[in-house]
Length: 417
Image (cartoon, rainbow, N blue to C red; front, side, top):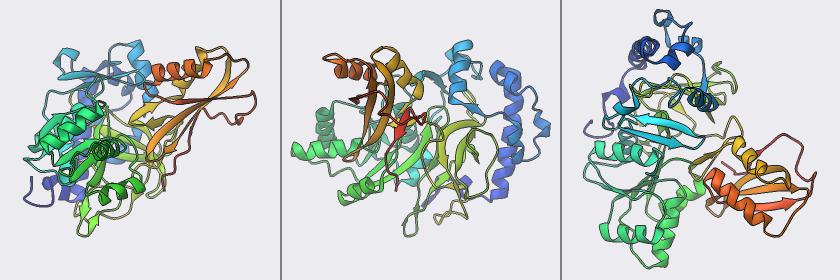
């Protein structure tokens, strides 16, 4: 790490040097995967590493989407042939919503999140209260690795048990916190309710959902400087917020361990700088690599370099979804899951999941057109919704024909202004 503002020299290298290094790594990755990963060998059968003469050659590679991962893993368990190491050679194996199965390398900070923590002001010797989930899904472990690789100690708090968590914070006095954007407010409010002092938390790293400006401001007023990073289970860190000479810089700086493209949604065609499109990312993970993974998230490349001195691309941040998948309280919910709920209840002819905000928290409501009903149907639907989506939601029953005829299964009614 550099002595002051940057994690390492990679962050400030000349863009031409970065592109040359990424091209070399891309060629080597394609050659290795064609030889050692059957799923990638099939997808890359028409791609020759020597034909990749610049990073624009990425457009020769097929785009891989989340539903591709699900289908490939079902057809060729456990990882669809996209793993470059045997499952027993991994550090951990995870199950994410979908379901999608992932594996981590045994290397420290395999998700490369230490870089984002450093940019957020975390330093060696900090105690970090980590509220990302550790159970089955990778979020908690990715953040845990990153904080410890930076030299921090970690309280592996996970989610839930709110009262016990605030008691632990009041006793242990951690300087830093990590978790989804909404959950820190839940803890701070509970601490105030119980008259417990949580003021030791001065900085926080959030991910897994949008950090709304009003919530960031509330945290600042409560003495917590919050920065966010953009990361996924399959890719690790994608981009992160930084501090410039006069505070928070605009947008997010792309991580040094990935190649990021913005493409026209539904295609693999790059869009012009500044145009909103779908985020597509290539990683170089040696165990579970991803080539041109379409995240389903919308963003745009910002012109120029960051005022913080880092020279990599900047993106505007999360600008919504390219498909109808929604991220709610850090969990993806897919249209297929809404269909699965409907399929279990013959009284429901049609349904739409509406996502909005209640106070500073995400809320989802399943609006169902029902042909017949019975006492307790909303409660039964709510139980099925939680079982399928792993999230609690409200249920509203309407008459046939009341939902718009626009093909929408998930409506994201949250404002991101």
